Length: 329
Image 1 (cartoon, rainbow, N blue to C red):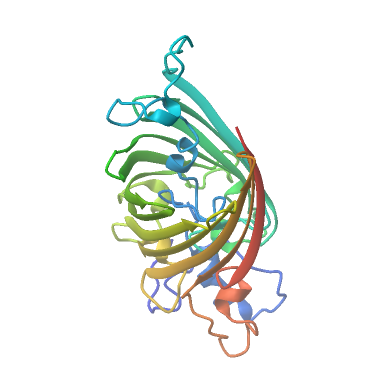
Image 2 (tube, rainbow, N blue to C red; image 1 turned 180 degrees about the horizontal axis):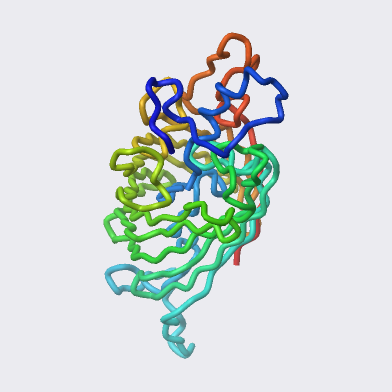
């Protein structure tokens, strides 16, 4: 990423282009979008299916460990005296596969506003340790149809490991390390980087509140977009609640990006907000169906009419609705 002489052109990167509008004068405006960094999600933070990247703790919630946190069983789960009790398995494997109409990472499209396939697989230990991978198809071709991912290829693989626990007082936590990998990126293009993450949550009845953050330190080649430090921080809050006597859960999410991954917003130096509202139904414990509204505060400037729909909406960084369906095991 070349540093420019003013705020508008500071995002310009050579050898990337945004050409499908067919306007020569548009090249200068498009340079902002093309040069913005690839997405990379959060905690990976997820609202719905990887609208943001995978949240390992969500998948781990499907893993059942016998007994309560205090080691005591309740009347409901106390077995009959003559029934043999199998000890809990130390390791379990969980996973899912999801199809989403538009892969949004922290509010930004990663699939050119087209459907994406997203499988995940985790190995979980009863202590709370886990390791896993989450994958998604993306649109990172050299044609620049998804400008922030130009040259990143057509697959994203997230590798992660961490530790999560839910305590008997309703509090829970999750800490881990995530690595973003783009296996078929354009030769010579630096794309991959690490991002540690952490979150705490509290559950009372059907309501869960969560606060989390992720920090990608500077000096990694996959974040080297300017002459500065190029680190990035993402913080977010989420609130969800189930509707009694229904399989439906309502979720809300608010996140803030500051740093090298915030260069997608030409109206601010290196930051933007994203938010979403989701309604999700889980059927028979395995089938998940949901719809989401996703938006950001990235500018909708039209730049003298070159972008009639506005900057964010044209580049898949503005308001949208999406749907997803998934199966977990």
